[in-house]
Image (cartoon, rainbow, N blue to C red; front, top):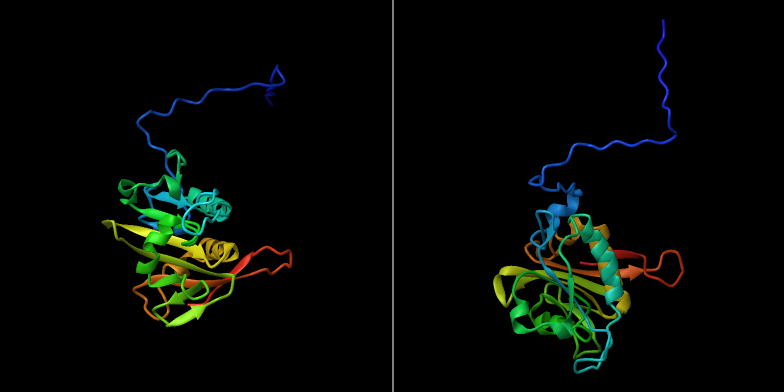
Amino acid sequence: MAVFYQVKDYAFGFRMARTPESQELKISSPKHGKIMEPFVSQGRLNAKIIVGSPDPHGPWKARSSDSCCAIDFALFLGAFTDGTATPNYRLDTEIREKDLRGNLILIGGPTANMITNKVNPKLPVFIDLKHDVKIFSSLSRKAYGEDENGLIVSVENPWDKTSRILVVAGKRFQGTRAAIIALITKPEKIFSGNKHDKNVVAKVVRGYDMDGDGIIDSAEILE
């Protein structure tokens, strides 16, 4: 004995029971989510992302081209957040003294991002503007002069001791791109500390064009 069932219409739908409004959205964060604290916390971006203005500004009258690198980094951060906090970025020219409090993520070097310029001299690895714009490490006492060199540094916020600043920058645009790639692909190594001092989160990287299309697509950690 068999019973056959058949739908009488070609399409149909049904409505699920409503989810209680008090139920919070659960974010299934990748394993790197914990590493990004305190810049990301409980599924929320807990920082201001500051990029350089595309208009000529600052003593060097520079136009920032590093902002496009921040897109890849934003996609990386998006894996740990629910995307509800907007806007998520500010231009350096929009920042006032009161905006320097809290966690900050600075994209771009000191000639194109004026907030990076303010904190640059306080970094253990910084961009030396006085000697042919080289990245200098006070930990290894080495200077890095390739355009593909970049840095990633996380330090205490000098304007707010309870918060931190993450600086992702390069000697040139290629270096900033290399730093972003290193941060996205090797976050555990980036935040493990400098090889000369594990207590200091400061890395120097070099970018490479592995497929020969003229675009940096890989990064090596130098220290």
